[in-house]
Length: 194
Image 1 (tube, rainbow, N blue to C red):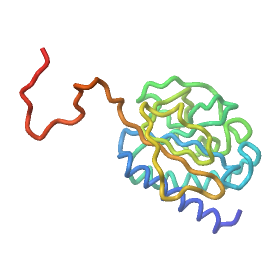
Image 2 (image 1 turned 90 degrees about the vertical axis):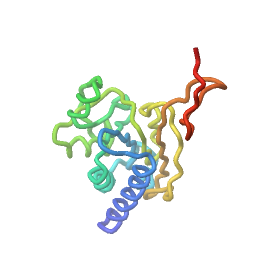
Image 3 (image 1 turned 60 degrees about the vertical axis):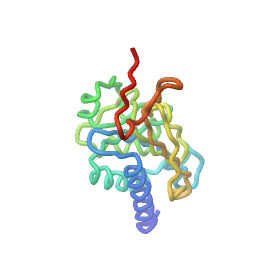
Image 4 (image 1 turned 45 degrees about the vertical axis):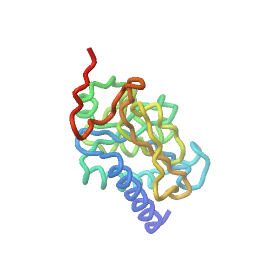
């Protein structure tokens, strides 16, 4: 792929990541999980034609926005590494995640996870995470790594390269029954439960 195509992928990725970050309120301490099929971005069937140069373009777009907003990113590996997640060791330790041992490579982990691992200061692999938002480039199924409750987000760009793009933000579950209140009224109510 040429430089112009790679730059287009980087720009599209930055655009959708920024849109998701703004909508989901991703800031310091929040985590975005990213699942990617570089094969799908290149117009091939998932898992057949991983491309590190595509991964580098995607990574550059995501990193640009993560640096701007201050959130952390966890990159989902493929099923050969049980969809474990590549992230900075400091994030793994801060969140108290269970570490697993492997080094992702394009044929076992995926090109995106492999590129992310090699780009980090102190990479680590986590077994699972409960991220605040997710970006799925190429329908890699990231739902297992999102907090409950996931809310689909329709982005302005629905494709990067040839891959479909899906996104989700999360919100806390609403608890209670018919008496539950989810926002404080403008004037305090003096009715209390005993």
